[in-house]
Length: 470
Image (tube, rainbow, N blue to C red):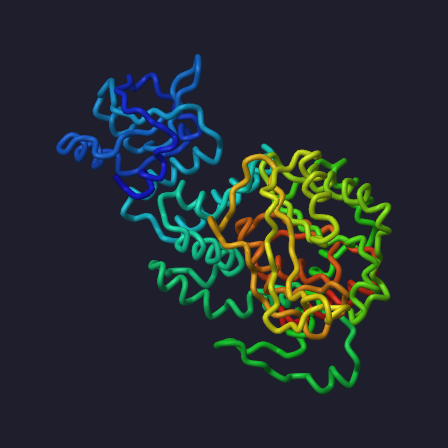
């Protein structure tokens, strides 16, 4: 049994001998198979090594899933029955998994075909999880279904994206190692070269002096030389695309529109005002001019509305994380979340700041605080992408903040990877400086961030330029 067949055990096929005329070829009826006579001779001499795969359909003939050539050869031999693996009614994704399983029995199957089909299955599994309001599959879930390890799947997903962009790079390349080697040479130009090809000549107006300075100048990226002006244009267009992931507007108004459209995300990140009169509690805090505080009297209603939108935007199995002031709103947050439908252990996750001297307005009687907390809220039967991760995150604080409550991008990268897998959809309801958006982009998530201040979008642009070298 192959590794992939072991991964299919959850589909519970049974082995059964069926009459040939009970099997419907379906779409395969239009395929003209070659080498049938040779295959028939081999089956006659050695028997059928790999069973035909079919799917049971109530009141209808069995549908052929995989093994069209073998079944055609059986018919060529004028046999009336054949041994089959019979699967129950399957989803489209499960059908693809079965087909891939059978394809891997072929010795001549090119690695690029396997890579592409694995990526297609992963994409469909994510799409189906949103459509069916189910928890997003983790890389481990998908790799287990395919009978491969998580690292192999992660590499194949990355290679698939590059193959799609650079098909010429893999022409006449047979081995997986050579495919990866060729694509690695182009990886640094994954954005730059493709955008530059499509860029219209006058898309971006550059200063005359800048054009004169860079005219004909070349920059080396790996083994590829690219015109410096094309690089600048490509980076500019990429930046404009990423800026659209930060939406300036009222969080509740945007969330209401998303709910009306029945939009779903796998993870909601919430870093709301804390209702603590921030400018007084944290007197040394930077950039508080655009920080919108919520009066303590209004905070319960505000928090309930926030969590309700988060709950409605999650599928039946999803996560939300909410930052809060543990000394003021711990019980309120837990009780409000449970009232809405979330479950929680009530034990917060802690971000500790090893480089911080702490916040303390009364150092003679109080310790200085060098941590912040968020509460994990679970909807349905969501499962962590990183099983059993400890609840402490140790990352240095941001040294020069553009937003009063700015948190490091690296912290968010770790948090997101803990809860969801690559390709998942993330919503940041109060994006602030945009660091959660930048982290999601860097890690390969689909993301939207919302904030009410245009000035914060400027900060986000600075983070994008810094972390993505744009």
